[in-house]
Structure formats: C-alpha cells, structure tokens
Image (cartoon, rainbow, N blue to C red; front, side, top):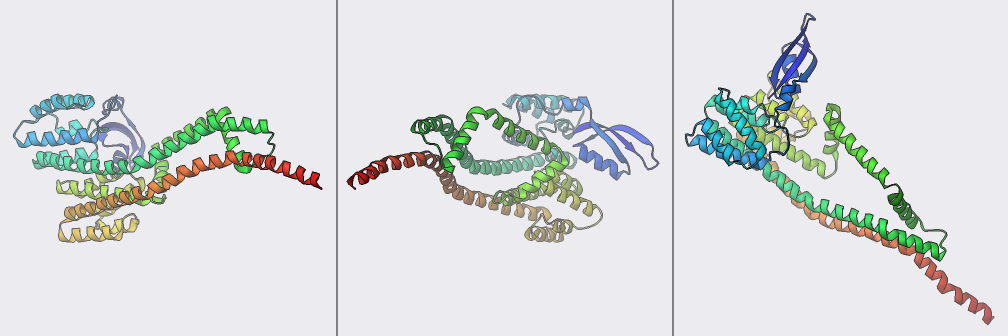
Length: 414
C-alpha cells in the first residue's frame, strides 16, 4: 500500500490537501469522491516510490507460493510471527524477496501488522495478497489465509504454465520462419538478382519484383524497419499506461478471433477463483469486488466489476449488474444468483472457476492441435513463395534459349 499526496475541493469550494495510504491512485480517488470531495490532483510521495519492491530482479509466483506454504506451516505449528519471518528470510533463495522479508520482519518487530508491512511493497504483494492476510489477521486464522493464498497462486501458476506451453510452439515456428525469410532475402536473393542482370532479364514477374524490392529494402533501409517496429512497440506500451489506451487495447483483445474468447475465459476463471478465495477468507463483498477488479487483467471486465460493486453498495444483488454488463455469460450469472440465494456464493464461484479452468485447458489443447498444421503451411508458403519467385525468370530464360534454335532450324529447312 503506497502513500499519496492529494489536493481536493470540498462542497463549499475550499481546497484541501493531505496524505493517505491506498492500494493505488484509482482506489484513493474513489474513496475521496465517496466522501464528497472533488479530486484535483493525486501524486505518489517520493518515499513511497522508493519502497515498492522495485529494484533489480523480480519475485516470481513460484517464490511467493513457496513463501506462503512455508509461512502457513510455521504459523500453524505455533512459531511466532517474527521467528517465522526470520527463518523464511534465511531459507528464501530469491535475493529480492529475502531483502523484503527482512524489512517486513523489522516492521513487525516494531509493532506494525503483517498486512500493513506487506502493503508497502505493492509490486510484490498485490491487493489480493494484502486482503487475504488482513482478513486472516482480523479473524485469527492467518495460517488458513496463507494456505488459501498458496493454493490460489499454485492454480494461477498452473494456468499460466499451460498458456505459455501452448503458445511456445507457434512463437518458435514464427521466429524460425522470419529468420529463414530474412536470411534468404538478405543473402540468397541478391545473388539471383546479379544472375538476372548477367542473363539480361529486363522485365521481372510481379512475384519476383516484390521479392527484389523487399530484399533491397532489407539491405539499404533496414534501419527504417527497426524504427517502425520500435515506434509501434513504444506506442502500444505508452497506450497501455493510460486508462483510455488500456480500454482500447483490452477491448481489441476480446475481439481477436480465437485468442479473444480464450482471454475472456481466462479472465472469468481468474475472477471466480479470486472472488471465491476472498469471500471464503471472510473479506467483505465490496472490498473483495474492488480487489478482484485489479486482478482480472482486462480493463473492460474490470470496469464491469467496479460498476457491479457500485450497484451492490446501493442494494442490488451481485448477479443483476453483472448480467447487464454483457461481459459475464448467462451460466456464470445464474450460478452466482443461485449461490447468493443458497448462501454458498463462494462454493458456486469455485465451481465456476473449475469449469472455466477446464474450458481454458480444452481450448488450449484444441488450439495447439490446430496451430501445428497452420504453422507448417505458413512456413511452407513463405519458403515456397521465395523459391517460385526466384525461379520464374530463370524458367522464362531457359524457355527462350531452348526455343531459339528450333525457330532458326525451321526457317532454314524452308
């Protein structure tokens, strides 16, 4: 949880300034608006920016999962919080996580709660992590909260591993295809161009001309291609840092054929799994919805969740605003409605998560099977285009050479 300085205007028009801790700027802005203030500016303090878990290296989900599992085991065995953090600091292999655990241990020894100490490192311990730990502290079941968190991280890791494994093959094939095409166009095509000049070929077929122009571009203006790629990459990255840009990109992601529905299923599985984990840990529904909105990984779905949260605060049931958003399929809405009526919402959400995790796995398997022949055809087309384009002028020259003697011979016979 970071510290922010804010400037607001109250109902009477007076300007007020202050500092407050929050998960992010959007959360603080909503909190101030709910209190009746008009927000002018929110900036993060320099001290908070330095202590966010930044620096070299990164903490992987696997490291956090192992940390939670070991932490839970020691707390359950009756080991004190400070002693458990001391042992974890010694055992952790990740140097960045080791440093953060040591700093958290110092904070806890000085009387700070574990959740507030962890909240100072939002890049390592996200909203879900902090929310579950805080709920475990309040309910006196910290070991159970850590166990659930470890289970959640393991499920998340498993899904990410499957997605990564399914995407590895097509990415490798595309890279190999690009290397082959660039190699042929850079080293082989120029030799054929020289051969065509020696043979006196004046007019090239359109396929050959396209390939020659592309080869000349790679040889003479390759830097322009790099600048274009860099400009596109930087533009996408910059757009991703703005709210409008993220909305446009995430909306396009949902509409991409094949991969759009897959990403939607992944977001739904993450929504159901996260919300189920938070609710079963005793986190209030409004706080849980706010946390979930930051973990689904899609701005459009996140907005739908936050709109549903606003409607819930006004007295509506959770399924009604979700249904109106059109981002949640009827099956999800009906199961959530049944869960609310039966008082087993967390269990229904867990079933929804399991269903969509199975759907994601099935889609990935089908996608992998379908991509393999498509990639092979794609690679064959690239190489085949180059080969045909290079040999078309040669075949024309050979045809002319073989036809010339016959023509002369026929004239002499007459």
